[in-house]
Image (cartoon, rainbow over all chains, first blue to last red; front, side, top):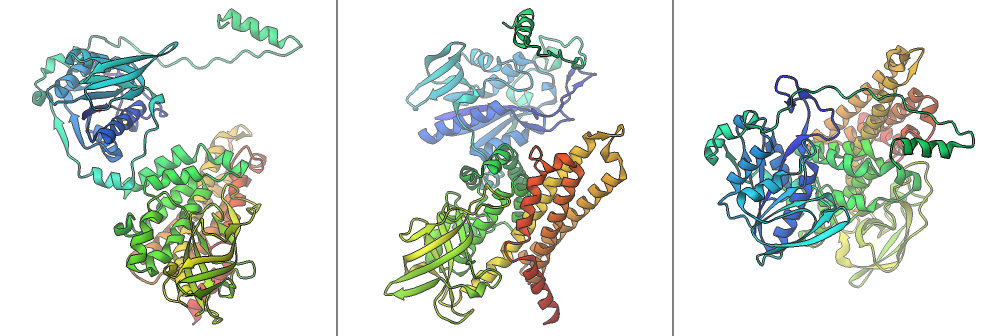
Length: 260
Length: 369
């Protein structure tokens, strides 16, 4: 089974993030980049399926130069090869453009499964997996917390819902997005890190992928950040003094705020 | 080797930091953390790749220990002891012995213990009384080992025994599997610090092991033990520097936030000079252990430098952790901050792997004999 797992380098979740006033996009240079946390679960799931079916895992990332670190991390966890979609023309791409580029590159590579984390911690749109599936004309099994892909041309998933989960099933090839409850991602081993240095990473530009530069990047974005402002400073909280009626006062407050 | 240090840092942040306070408070041994570190390849770093090690030099291995100790001394010291417990087989074992057992010992799934000390035989290591008697194709081991890190939880024990009355030339090393009949452990010691780490007496009561579990020739054990200790001392030095760095991290953070007389206390020279002295001691200790490690890695003699590094770094860690408590004042004396624990933990480093008095003896002898 051939599995393409899509990973994104994002600003370290715990660091302070800034927007670049000129482009109104995220300033990626000023913060450390790490692999999007949910993508670690996607890589783990891909590796588990590949191990069970003697399959192959190709890790794909679209992003600036430093995204190679995230590709290397997936390779050191055990993925077999990497693809880096790298082109200055992609900067500022929205979800629609991102899904176009990813779909174009995956198309024709014979992937049985394409696995994503269900969202990235920076943009948090949660739509790219579905858009890629639509562009490729493949079934989508999103928000999965359990996946069975025995390599017999079918894939079954537990799809998380507000009230529990749905059991969904499709034929492969298919697109999957996973949530963090699905597994416990492995750490790279030191040997894995050393081995990853020798694994192939293919770099693909817009021209290589046959993508017109007018259809991606900030200029092609369907949405636009009109303006942004700093989050307001946190106001002082309300102190409730308990004079025997503390519980009632708290309940009144919560009901006023429509929490209860 | 930045990759190795980055990996260690990630493991330390994600696996050690979230557990350390609770485990040390409750005296819980973090066996699962060693499994994670083992899976990442950190339990066989300085040993040959042929047997599953990573074959990294001591300069890198010791920095790994320092990074771990910065978050959790119990774990760093455990890795150091495990590495020490593999030393006898790796250096004195035959190829058959190493092929048979070393890959599992370095592979990450197993944890080792190193049994040299006895209740009456600490600094006077050659005074050990545990016996090994040859009976046909077996040896029968009898005696009690003391202060054994991982005693009772280890999967294998490297045990120094007496095979003849000759003080030093009568000592022989054995590799004993954890489940062997007759091997048991006492109730763990209730220690001043490092309460997450298990330290216990290990009893050997007619423990029978096949003769091929003997490491090296009969009578070669003392040399094997001292060899291992030279390397073990470097491990302790690196652990001490990591612990001191952890204390400095907390002290600097606190001094920048705590305000008195309208200013952060870090802006007062009385505090900032203390922080400066702490940082300088840490940097000096790091340079000293790295110098000894470079000598070891290039095949030069390093015993004296290892003793100096162990002596200096552990005394420094005691001083730095004490200063950290002082910088935090009352907050440093209570369990809300980890520095009181660091101070308790530092003390043991001045004692283990040769007391600092023994280190001075080693250094003094090198100067005068």
